[in-house]
Amino acid sequence: MFHILDNAAVISMPSGVILAPIAITVLSFCFAYALREGTVGNIVISYFLNNYLRWRYPINSTDGSIALPSAVYKFPNGQGNIAKFLDGEEESRRWQEQLGPIYRIWAGFQSEVVLTRPDQVQAVFKDSHQHLKGKSINSS
Image 1 (cartoon, helix red, strand yellow):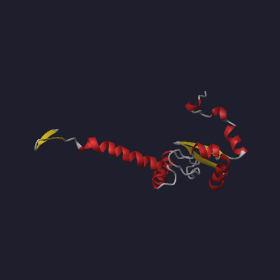
Image 2 (tube, helix red, strand yellow; image 1 turned 135 degrees about the vertical axis):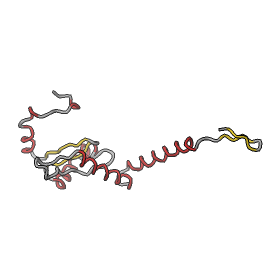
Image 3 (cartoon, rainbow, N blue to C red; image 1 turned 90 degrees about the horizontal axis):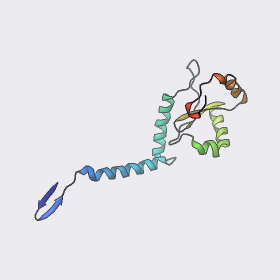
Image 4 (cartoon, rainbow, N blue to C red; image 1 turned 120 degrees about the vertical axis):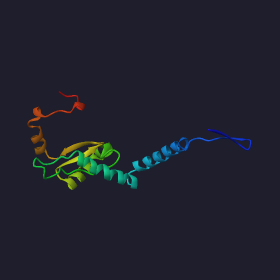
């Protein structure tokens, strides 16, 4: 709108025009802060995502009484590439001590089941011709 007050022209804009960029900037800084591991924002987001993912994608025993032990999801990428590949040997030992010989870790929002003993791998692959393969691995 355009107003004339005492020979001065004043242009008034809707408050949303000014507030929207400020809100976007503030939210961007909050999100960037939450990405840093160990911050309150990161801990809170990780907590809620961990509980949601365990609820949404449960892996239970055949009778449903026991859940597969899972590493705690850490925002934004679960256990991510650094923990799995660069620090994999130490992290694998730590996860095995904490969670046992079979456990789940997270790659983003995808869960990965880790087997740590050769007999477990043999049991899984003895009938691998009957396994359903993921579309993302381009197999038939």
